[in-house]
Image: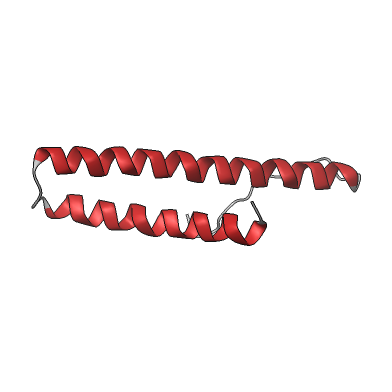
Length: 79
């Protein structure tokens, strides 16, 4: 899978997760529909986690090749 495809998959999955959340928050579907949406959401989240873990591993490998093996935690000043 190419980087562009992984990025597109990640973005599409996040968009679908947001849509599923919005649909479930409306509370207008049956229990079975809600459970199906929840199950789909879990599948998408796991897929996103895998893509992000692969990206993190690639960053680690690239840093090691460049001799800068120390990663620092990102601190978001907005939090």
